[in-house]
Amino acid sequence: MDEHATLHGMNIDDAYVVERRLACGPAGTTELVTLGDVGPFVRKRLPRERANRVVWAVLSQCESLRLPRIRTTYELPDEFVVVCDYVPGDTLAEVVEREGALAPERARALAHDLCEALADLHAHGAVHRDVAPANIVLAKDGAHLIDFGCAGVPALEDDSQKNPQGTWGFAAPEQHGFTMVDARADLYAVGRVVAYAATGALPEGNSARELRAHIAGLPEGLR
Image 1 (spheres, rainbow, N blue to C red):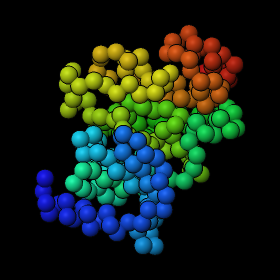
Image 2 (cartoon, rainbow, N blue to C red):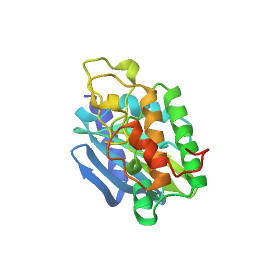
Image 3 (tube, one colour):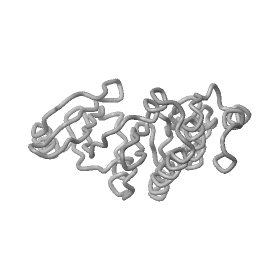
Image 4 (cartoon, helix red, strand yellow):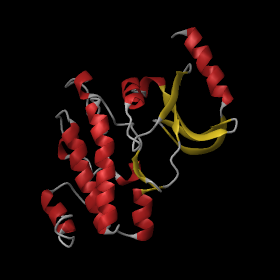
């Protein structure tokens, strides 16, 4: 480990003030932080051995407003830390649970925003692999894709690396097997997410027949 980089990271880390903890688990800790009068920001503290630095490097190159805007990354003795802009809003899961299904026009806008985010991500060679209601924030300016813990760059992976399974019912079937996935898995997930948003029905499985049953009552164009 580069001692100078670690000391630099520790100095940066100490400058942030934690306003509240957003999440904590084996995959790391997510906090809402400020830096003097600037912020708030989201700070993700990831265990060094679980941090996919390539994904965060790719995200720092993306320009879509639907993806996290990376402010800085730095190394600590036991953690890799990412600081990005905070997007206020509720997740799609929270909104549908509280309000029920989205109106068709709002569901169409959701699909557009997700495809905009993924187009940029895929153009840089990365896939999200967990496009699901809990990983989408509905803000005033539209939908934002978050939580890149399952993301990867397929070109840099091989068959010996297992795909993260994603969220059951939204992840493509191949994510639950032994086949490497690509951008098509994200597009499959967008369809499942928009069907959920437009109907309020949680998928019980991963069959096309089930999806057709859920969306049978939607306007033809949206279907």
